[in-house]
Length: 253
Image 1 (cartoon, rainbow, N blue to C red):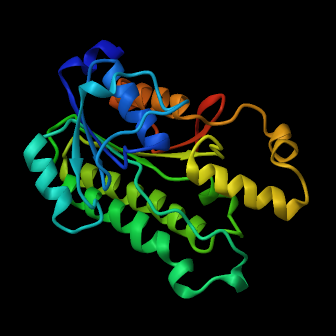
Image 2 (image 1 turned 90 degrees about the vertical axis):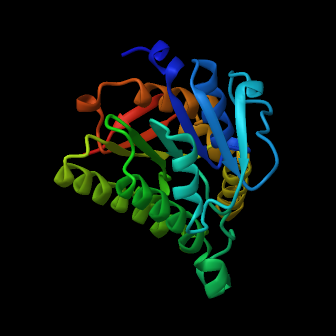
């Protein structure tokens, strides 16, 4: 398969108004997919580093992706072959003892809930045969994130339930592919910028000093290229989980 194969396909990108989501939406549009961008705000914002596609070719849906009925309604309306879940809450960047339960649990109540609703509906509907769902989690699911409350645990749960969805699809003979992508720091995004600033301050270093040993960093363009690759790779060759760094995708066992 090649990117040209996406010209007749519909992709729903959940959380597409900014950051990695905007980069993914514009990258998919740039290779010809019909993109439906779902977010709470009014339009996809493609700022510096947010992708190379043409945002004029993206249809926008303003909706709260965490509401129980939204996933089923939009999947019924657009009948997509590709669903990409990027939406989530920005964690409260504080040490554990400075969190409240409300700030600690925000990513469980947002990120995990969104993944649950959309994975569930993709199985129940189900998506058309050959469809695929890509859940964008976080590298924090592997390494932890002591300054972001329950964020790392929520992102690990997204990975787990994506695996559960794949197992259920196989058990039911649905011919669907579910995979999860775990990006490392993406300091061009609002979420990545706040995390980098918090961890640099904790280490007593400047942001530049903190990032220097990390090598190439994840950008919205890199995330977009990764999702295009996964969307155009033969189903049999797609792994259940990938780490995403500035150098691209790395399969996880």
